[in-house]
Length: 454
Image (cartoon, rainbow, N blue to C red; front, side, top):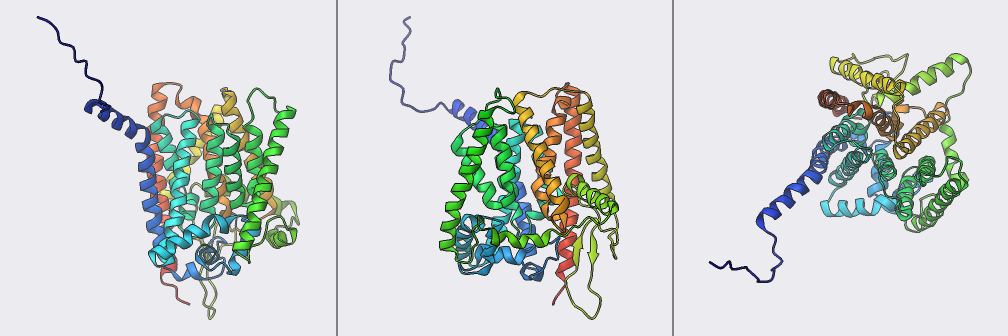
């Protein structure tokens, strides 16, 4: 019996089984990312929508860890002539980057009460998504990268600044994108310039991180003092500043009250935040201790709140801070907070054990670790002398801390299957405890201001 061969040409249709395999493959690759975004965007936007309806959100005054929500709301959704655009002296391109889409969304939805929570939560969730990209790029498996990114999303700093209208959700997202670029195999000059302009455009001091990443993203076979490495970094930083300068001039035409970052007199007001004068070694020790606690602990798991209330008959919003040794009405230390502190301390101890074990990193991961370490050192030096309430800056360094921890413990996690399973169980438990802690933290803040009317 002859065998008949089908010689008809292919029609281009995909076999149903192959199509199913493609969908499954897509879900495996991108499903965790989509899930992360939906989960954290939903949580962030729900809290942000509740917060923005409170009187404190529209009141000028630095009651919430020196944050200024009212200024950011008006900068995002106010008229082009609004004086709140003057903060571009330290947030160089904030108005031109975010005001047009924010104003468009406000017009579409009919109120800033609907648009601003979406924008803040969007960039908060994008920061978590790009964190997963970073953790995957440094060698973590899908599930582990998901857990680490979710842990970042549940930290006190990331949750808080993804709830309130402030500039730090934008800043944190731009820096995480910059580090994700460094951790990837991409070495596109155009991508580096774009991410550098966005990071610098969000916060003027981020030029330090741009310079560090430009230096570290050079070919790994160049030595640390190779002239071409130094020249490449200097050229990229100069290009970022030049592009940002032209954009700042364009921004000035669109927003007359904006202040170009390159005019020194506009940034001179920041000298008022140089509030720390070292009068004695004791003050220096106290400042250093407070800064280290904010860097390594408070951004991850916030401690008990310090609530400062105005004495009658003065009526004012309560002022919230951390780390005050003379706090008049400290909150009690919750058991959940204690659990998160212990578990985070265990992770930091594992980092020390890994470093003592002298486990070697690849050249690429070594440059990522170098960048994160130098950036944290630069932040430590800056904030030793600059800034009143240090919690205001925690979202800019919390990812860097967690990323360094991840880099240090990765060799231990994948040393054996037992280690991998133990890490996943620990990370999942830590994520649950941290999520509960941050949920209670945000609920407490909203509750404090819900019944205040001035």
